[in-house]
Image 1 (tube, rainbow, N blue to C red):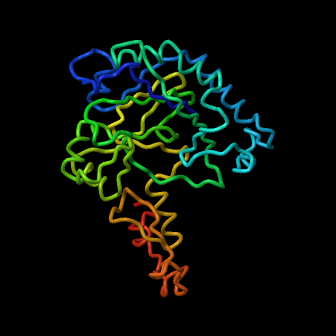
Image 2: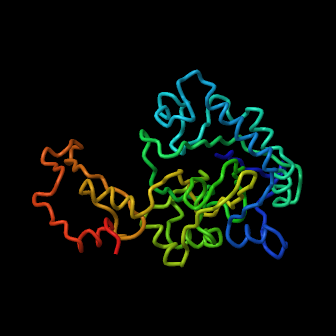
Image 3: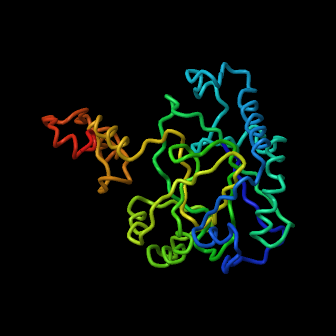
Length: 311
């Protein structure tokens, strides 16, 4: 569970440069593109904000029972975006949201980034992800940046006010460390300027992610505790991971179970390619099959190669 926010100076004349030795978390923000500020909010107050968020979630008069996973359904929940966030219902202006945004430790962190305490804060969203919902499968990674290639330098620093434990297998933020430093190079060498947009959002395809991998960059799950503040440069490649999100081999097993196709990658970037064939006019091909014409013999060697059985 978290609240998402971004804060910038009230008066800005362009990007800033994060360089040099600060002797604190700003060194990590500059070098890796993200940083975790421990106990930006006292844990006791973070738990109170969590409680307020859960009270808000159950305030809509539905049979939603947080102790009963059977009630964690779309019908019982307020409408969420594809990102498992709540953007409507005036949620972003609830008192607990503003109380969290204006916590001294949160404001101070952004003030240190921008070198001023005259700041503007975004009205972003509330994220409450109920784990392993049966009616909402885990989402495949969606790596992106939140800055247009037309902007160069640090224009925006985003934040997550973390209200629940976010361990290695939990939901929350995935980052590609040091991708902030290669932001310009990627767009200058891998894309055409005429394709650039003013919109401060750009998703990367599976093929494009190979470029980052060749550069030696690997995704990291950002771990945090209640009260921690996660900050990241908007040029850093990142995405949100849902709690209980299937790991690559688990997704590989799921694809195998429906006789589906994946990408060129055997161990990562695993997702189910469209299984049903469509004719040129857009209609479904009546020749579609649910299984192979001749099913393979499920030998131990095959199952190990497929990632179904361990070696």
